[in-house]
Image (cartoon, rainbow, N blue to C red; front, side):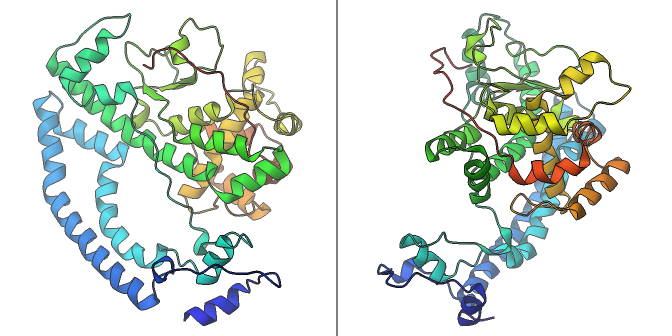
Length: 395
């Protein structure tokens, strides 16, 4: 399909009298021939990278783990659970996938966007890549033992472990951060998408300034892995510490902690807690969202009073809704940019009945009036006001 044919299919029109700015050739998209040539080169590089990594990375990781006292089976199991093996294999798949996934932004879309007529669109529902921050003090501390020693000294609970134990903690942290960063990146992509802004403005009443603030929160590195300085109660997979929560740890407000075993769980814990951060629990969720969640909730006869109080909490429903979106997209059922229909609902229920969804998502679907789910999925983005400034030392 050539450019002229695609331009006609898009049927994009400008208002009469619109003056398009001059655009240099560098600002226009590549021709199809140039794109394919560029993708050929990228594919060759990806395949070469796969061959190299498959031959060296996996054995090196296993060997390193054995020197730290882990068995080969333990390391292999952890790699499988964290997606390391599938990520290596996926390098080769991505080579051929490059041909299918690249965005073709039509010149008319670029020009119209620059003229303020309409927004430039991407085909295939591709979501823009969003860079997330990876700069929190705990993450940096695990770069070396010397940095870790300095990090420990900044905390009130001073308990320095030996270098051998540090190496084990470092491996655990890297597995957790890798898994959590994938979830954070997905959430940031959603919050930065045009569809998110549309829902937020149309149904939630967010201003442009508020939406930009949410984008900032989505990319901020507010994640912490459970350790002696970031404890979690026994059996708790994650926790978000809201502002002015009275925990006695103001330096942790606005942060969220996930279990050191999170990478072994079949649960997107970082995504769940990250969504709590977006709305600061219930504090800055819109009336619209709270009202709709309240109308949509249904209790189970087996639920105790405390269960009802927990699952009916709008912020818990909101976090589980976000995880449902993530899991449906991961399984190729639905994307955030699409309208959620009864067809998608039926497929979600099928996956739940087949035990192919996480426990949190299953809890959500069992306690929601299913006829309300399309309305929830298609309208709620959420609302957040400015969070109080945290003047405490970051930890």
